[in-house]
Length: 58
Image: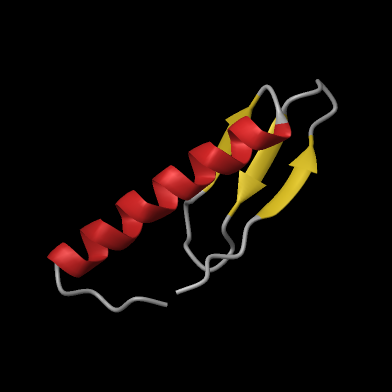
């Protein structure tokens, strides 16, 4: 499965990474790489939770 992550920079300088296919997967980081890593980790947790509860995977 491929997880698409969109990245943007906030006005205060923080980076934000979001996985649009997984509602609620949004993470901030001080660097672009940190935001991406956090979004990936959160995305994996969300997918694991869905699998555990028998919910569909997008």
